[in-house]
Image (cartoon, rainbow over all chains, first blue to last red; front, side):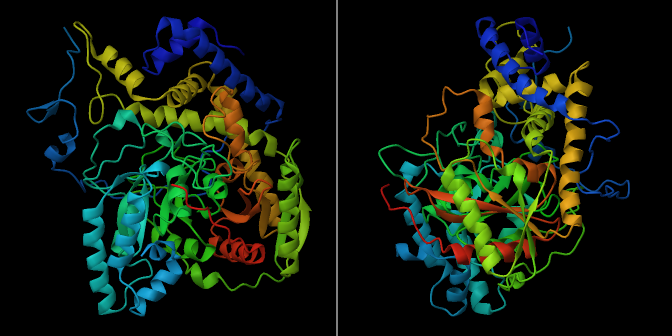
Length: 95
Length: 493
């Protein structure tokens, strides 16, 4: 399966990575190369095999549904590129 | 002075306990070696104040008696580990200036045991790479050299490997998603172990592919790996995939006796085009284990050749999801926006500026294989193949095999920049012998076993049963002793 320029543009947008129009052909070619490599997987007979969800058979632990942490907004915000009045600030989302 | 930074953890521990040296002296020796090794670009951030404070505290604790084995040991920490107040950016521009407000579980356990942080180590960006050439800090350089070329220390834990091999620290932390501890260990003539998935907490380690990532020690000897792994391992309520089982005394498992053990040699690892000297080293390794009383058997792991393509579906899929958090809102870099740019432009420009080319490629591949219409064809198929790869291992272990011996890498260290124009897939082939171990969640260790014709180190890999790191380390130490690898890189930096 090879990736054309339109697919490369769509994947870049889905991944939220800006790619200049002139860079799309090279990107499409690289992604196609990687996908071709992956297509070897089609040779394997996987009928009746369950997809692996956990590499070691284990049940995820559960804990009581109670608040165990929190109450330090200033620390949470300390690395934000833009924080105002106790909130993360971003460009306007709704008009 | 510089002799102190060459000590093994075991020798340093014994010297500290006998009062023959101090943690402060060890730490100062390492700091002075680091200062003289800027050419290697292994340490990207040095933390002398933290180190000297921790060393003094360690000396007080040792004087009081009953100090744990890691007490007073100066270590390097891979930049992937979050360390409180100390920039931790996974060698990525997108985490520029990020100072965690918290400490990873593994580093906290090391500090609780009295270890000393010298600073943060170079790596491939987000641990994606096999040559340490994708780092925002520039390449780390291998202390081994055979001509004027600078060689790669391997990746992604390239800075860790270079620092341990060049005697800048006594040991270092690494992480391994597809071979990132074992391949650089092999390229620099040191020991590196990836533990069983779930043995070591992932909490506070920047996530790449959560179902494959494990942290482990990178050390000069197998004994040191046993000592340090003991301090890193253990159940952590903050990582729901960490195993709630006791951590045995790994060092006590090093009996040197492997009589009656069964070692498997997988025929599928005999790749076409494998250099003759790697094949010869592999046979010599099997002879050494046989001479020590092990039984050598041929085994088959029939799905081996599908491990790399399965890995390069699963790891990018998980990465695309894990790396979605880097969006310029909560931490790190945010792009400068143009008039009228909205939040989508902020995301797209931030991620285009913040991620390097290889990370962008993997995020996009991951996005593609998870997208509607392709999820079954790629991602689910890869997870089924992964189940078959694990089944291959389960079957040979059920037949009584205790450990599996393979080469660690398909070549010795190559020159930095030599793969620059290669197809990305060619770089991925570096992981061909190591990636199966991550897919199956098994412990694997790289042990230096010889030099190639140019004089560069080559490693062998041993793969163990799940949770049997002690047994694996014991076999590895027998191999280490028999191989008698004592070569060190000559100092040129």
